[in-house]
Image 1 (cartoon, rainbow, N blue to C red):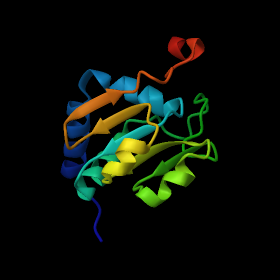
Image 2 (cartoon, rainbow, N blue to C red):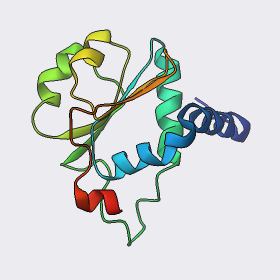
Image 3 (cartoon, one colour):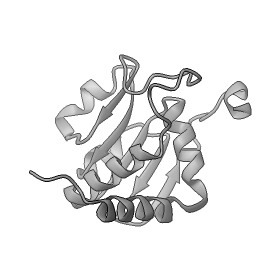
Length: 137
């Protein structure tokens, strides 16, 4: 299996940046602060390309100044979630999560929903997304 060409990879990065527009840094901040980020699309291929491109916007894991650890015992990356995963996903751990399942989209307690299919970004205002300290970051 061959990897993506540089042109394909940069095209995916451009698509993510275009989709998120002025919300790109807000979404990256929520990931760095280990909030629940849900990415939804009807097409699995769009989902995987989007999430892999989104990961390129994160600072490198080996940066000693970075205070958070990506995808640790407290914060998980789930490239695909099904309805059967919902119980596991509600056990106190937050996730960067991708799904094609409408029920997961409806039931997962996201802080932000990136709906690629509807070209929409929804911040969950019911949750107090950021503490006063996190807002200063």
